[in-house]
Image 1 (cartoon, rainbow, N blue to C red):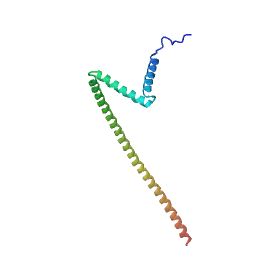
Image 2 (cartoon, helix red, strand yellow; image 1 turned 30 degrees about the vertical axis):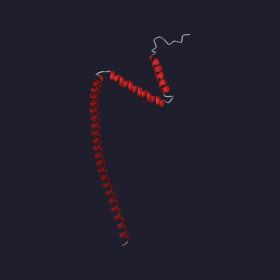
Image 3 (spheres, rainbow, N blue to C red; image 1 turned 135 degrees about the horizontal axis):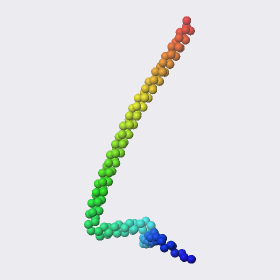
Image 4 (tube, rainbow, N blue to C red; image 1 turned 180 degrees about the horizontal axis):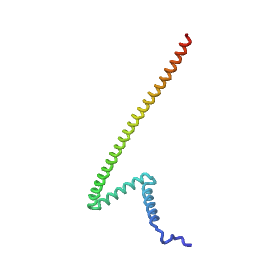
Length: 139
């Protein structure tokens, strides 16, 4: 029985997984089994490696710095534009809310006035009816 994988299968993920497990095991072993210490050592070594690689690329740091500055300026401009748009939308929304409040307040006052008039008319009719009832009984 053949237990080998098919020849067309890509073995790169398997090798990468084994490599990552080995590196993780190394750092965990060197940290005495403490995962937090192992993580700090890995971060320290990664930072050291990164700075070594950056120093080995002559002239590239200036190019990268210039590119990063340009990107930062473009991102800053886009952020400013987005903030301005958001402020404008907020102002528009506030204006619409204030307009709706004024309209609703006006409509509410109008309805209250109409209701008051109806109540006053009904009260005056009732009052005249009561007055006529009592005045007719006194005769």
